[in-house]
Image (cartoon, rainbow, N blue to C red; front, side, top):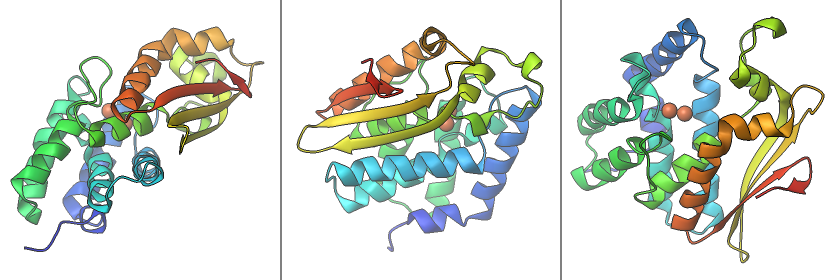
Length: 221
Ligand SMILES: [Fe+2]
Ligand SMILES: [Fe+2]
């Protein structure tokens, strides 16, 4: 049986439709961007972290696939979308012919990416968590009217640059952000992202790394 690849999942019409539809659902309830930009960035970052840490090629492919599918459950409901995404991923990956052992690892990662219920249960989950939670950026905000921004919009809008890298031999995973402090106080970032940063720290620990948060060239964690 041929291996199911990132390219196969990415070009699958069902996957593509669910990503677009999930984005539509979230936009309808006023959430920040979760569409092709977010999915592509999470896949890129998760794969790169694995590569930088020297994890095996096939695990890299699987984290890319997990990233493509991690938010499709939003087509059903935002609430518990991690678990819904995992179940939808099961059907899609089974149809494509992925072996159950790989599907189990991908499902576990997807079902554990939400901060309310997630844990870095394997290295795919850990890299997916780091890549997903690090996507804070101006381009995720749809609203044009600054007066209508909620705190999530404001914080995302204030982040003009973000990057996530894993450094060896230091074994550090570093999230570096450039924040426009004329728009928000750094405290506001922590007000909404503290739980996410704690989750990133646990994910980095699972990869035997230390998590660092650098904002405007100052290390805060
Ligand atoms: Fe999600
Ligand atoms: Fe996401």
